Amino acid sequence: MDLSALNAVANAMVTPGKGILAADESTGTIKKRFDAIGVENTETNRRDYRELMFRAEQTMREHISGVILFEETLYQDAADGTPLVELIKASGSIPGIKVDKGASKMAGFPGETVTKGLDGLSKRLRAHYERGARFAKWRGVIDIADGIPTWGCIKSNAHALARYARICQQEQIVPIVEPEVLMDGSHDIARCDEVTRSVLQAVFAELYEQRVALEGIILKPNMVISGKGSVRQAPAHEVAERTIAALKATVPSAVPGIAYLSGGQTDEQATAHLDAMNRIGGFPWKMTFSYGRALQAAPQRAWAGKADNVAKAQAAFHHRARMNGLASLGQWEKKLEKKAA
Ligand code: 13P
Image (cartoon, rainbow, N blue to C red; front, side, top):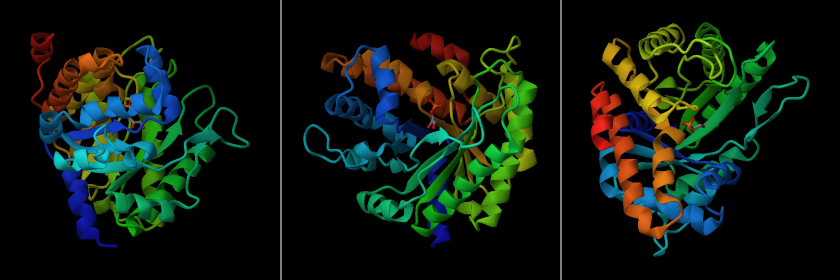
């Protein structure tokens, strides 16, 4: 393993002003997104939609440090025959690949899941590296409800994340380590804070035991935030302060960067929260975005499956990428949103 090369990729993924586009929706998840805009979930439509983002050259070059792909997309060609991965590389962005096989019901733990996908992982990573992938993603899911999460579930997901991360590094691929505490539920922000801290503690303990070099990973956590159904929605400054405090207490400073998931926040919330954290500052890591929904909801609505709407969709993508790029610098302002609208 060449750690300085892994560290160089990890640092490039969190270049200030840029962040990661999570375009790795599985075929089932992209169907949900396409259903919402009345688009049929065919391989061609998936290709056309993702191609329009990767061909937004200025947006990609200025604001997107890396793209997380679903396996189909990594091996797919654009309409003119160019591999999509080459479009990403041509804009100076780094291709990455989701390698987990999804969260499945955890035997003995009602209501909880553990993420699968370790079988044959080395071999798959070697092929993905050949095709151009330089980082990977694995998501462990932790749900908050009555009596959960259990320690057994936290520990199992942390262990799988650590095994995945070590295998990635062995294959010269930077692992994005993504333990997601879901924001579904009526719990308050204090409960999210407590659970997020336990999960991160467990993840870093396992990473240490599995001999993962922290200089060669990116952490993709949830923010510490109120449950969606909570009666009190904590304001942006509280989300920012609690998230920074929770990470400072659990994440070693050798980690080069934190790239948050959006997790069901509105587009503007996801931007405002990232901006608030970078304005506060005083932490040892770069902090940026690795958003799926909060980057793509607007372009998806603008596109609606019509070739005539490609330029409009690219403009919507540019706007969100620029807003989040500014948030990664702590330079976003709400009035910039209004101007664009
Ligand atoms: P969201 O930003 O939509 O939560 O997606 C990010 C992601 O990659 C989840 O695994």
